[in-house]
Length: 315
Image 1: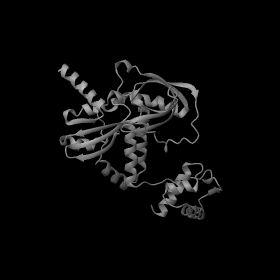
Image 2: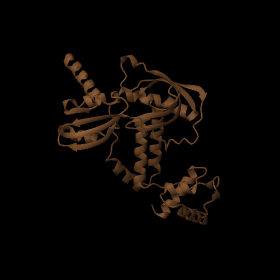
Image 3: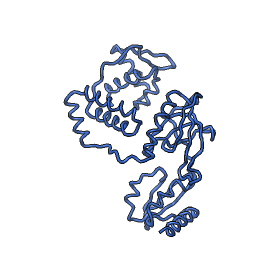
Image 4: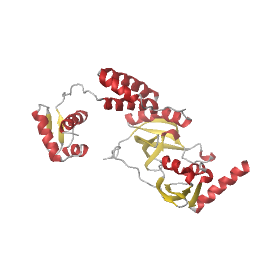
């Protein structure tokens, strides 16, 4: 990023936040604090009304706004694709807003930029496949979860864990303070303080049901930042598999969250996974049939044998 672009980006950063420290700007733009000081001096000399408070940071004088910003074709493509993603992955209400946002973006683009962005967009698609029941439930749940987040209210819901048996399919009732939503591995996850477990837990939104927004409010813990938050990795059970050469390519494309390492071996592809419970990957392993062999642990080998015997009896 050249200096001119960085100066504009700094003003946009200040315009979007009440106060920003020089250290934060230096980290954001991957430069030194001394360079940020020089940038602030240059902006002040250009009559941008920047105020600085020692030990606090910089801010823009209230009421100052940049004139409308023009977009490059690449920036326009990024915005239009983002709007399309919102249409497909958030609740219908946001889909309506995404549609209107796309129309507004396209309306303000100069004709040459609009034409170039159109040519790029014509080469890409966000394919909407048949929506599964879990995806529909996820979209329906998102509106209530988002409402609770914005109003800072607790929620009550039923939750079914992965691999639950028939007796557990009703799920357990949970009351939680929602801290934020994270999109990972193609699904929305709710980060929330669970009163049942008395700790921060992660809930797949598609597995939640009977959601109700309570009147009880809550406060975020001091210093909690969803952008910097990282889930504690409690996957302690290690699984070692051997995949036949016939499925090697598909395994490498699988990109499963549970896969820790993949290594070429004389007999095939060795896969190391870490999970909390074998149920999390049991059906994934069974789905490869005889092309996948469980090496460790022995208990999982026995579990696979039991499932194979059940299948044999059925057929």
